[in-house]
Amino acid sequence: MRSTHAIGVAILCVLAFRSGASDLPSGTTQRPKPNIVFILVDDMGWKDVGCYGSRYYQTPNIDRLAKTSARFTQAYAAAAVCSPTRASILTGKYPARLHLTDWISGEGAPKNSKFTIPKWQQSLPLSETTLPEALKRQGYATASIGKWHLGGPDSSPEKHGFDLNIAGGHIGHPASFFWPYGAPGNSHRVPGIAETGGQKGEFLTDRLTDEALRFMDSSRDKPFFLYLPFYAVHAPLMGKPELVSEAGERTPSGGQGNPRYAAMVKSVDDGVGRILERLDRLGLADNTVVIFTSDNGGAVHFGKPPATSNAPLRLGKGFAYEGGLRVPLIIRAPGLTGGQTVNTPVISNDFYPTLLDLCKLPKADSVDGLSLVPLLKGAKALKRDELFWHYPHYWNGGVVSPYSIARVGDYKLIRFYESGTEELYNLASDGSERHDLANAKADVRKKLSARLDLWLKEVGAQMPVPR
Image 1 (tube, rainbow, N blue to C red):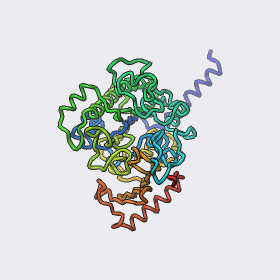
Image 2 (image 1 turned 90 degrees about the vertical axis):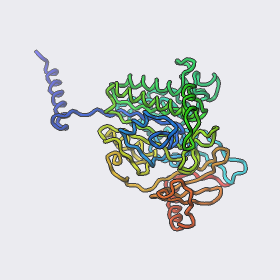
Image 3 (image 1 turned 45 degrees about the vertical axis):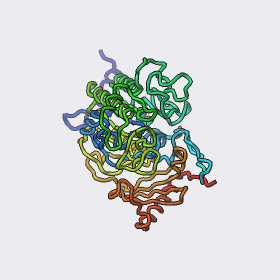
Image 4 (image 1 turned 120 degrees about the vertical axis):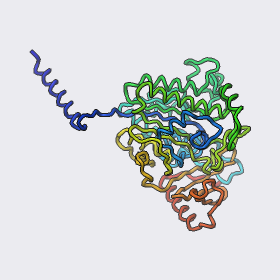
């Protein structure tokens, strides 16, 4: 004879089942929470991918992903250097609001500069609720595999919601892309992974992909967030010999012609292909959000020939112009039609609210970004027509000096603090930023300048300090 307790438990279970099922349409089952694979490439330029116009780099897997995804033509990093953009991805906030506005630990100001730099935040604040923390609370397994560059042991990935951290630490680039990834004691040796396997000839991008596949395999039975920030294609420029040789036989095109850089791009593309293939094999592709993007514009300031070219966009990494800020962005999301091109300006602050929206999780409080889901569903605009940037620092030995930017509609205002000047461009008609309209459109310049002042005050931006 069954006990009264057992019968009661059985009844409660049936009622709970019926209650949950009644919320669903007849004949359907509830889709599990989607997985997330976020692939972040270091220093990859807007035109470093075939589907964005490169005729030199070979990226068949990324191009294939774009055909089933939304491809954004005016996607921006929140900064023209790496750490601030990474912070914006994980918090949904402008770097200026976080006071984390330069790569960690920055360069300081040249002795002959008009300004010194403010006392800025040099690690991701522990007080911030990060994207992995928000997801972990909802049952997600979380992993950061690759470059971190948001602080040392006191602000490591594990301190910010990641269950697993592989190869992430304070360094911004590796000593070498080949195993053991730097000699013992080298300050830029990739942390951890040389001691846990590897052999001569192993390439860092391949190893990080291997680790990502292992995480996906082990997490297949629960929702997971894989943050895969490759160290490539950042310097030092080195690629697998066979890929360097292959690229060297191709004809340079559009200012792109560095075989070592091309080999690094190809290794990233191969990694993307392996990730997508594993999602297919595990039966997870239809329930996984895939994001592919970069942390800033392509690096055009070193290499012989130059590492890459962002043309027709002006200049590259570090600079206030489009070549330094605009990046490739591809998003594939479950249940949404792929293959569309999105021309609306977006920024890396938007990833946090977008992913929470796609996962149908509670909205984040006090973020600066907006969900991009309306654009993924076919909308032509967001409830926003302005974006901002603030860089109160010096970079590349002072070649770049402090600046702030406001983009409102198609107009972009750049304020340079050293010279005390402002430049104005109409990006719709002058995407290469060759025709400064500051004098011809003085009324527009003044309007954007006033809006920039207000924004700087709103976010509590730290300003360069006069000497």
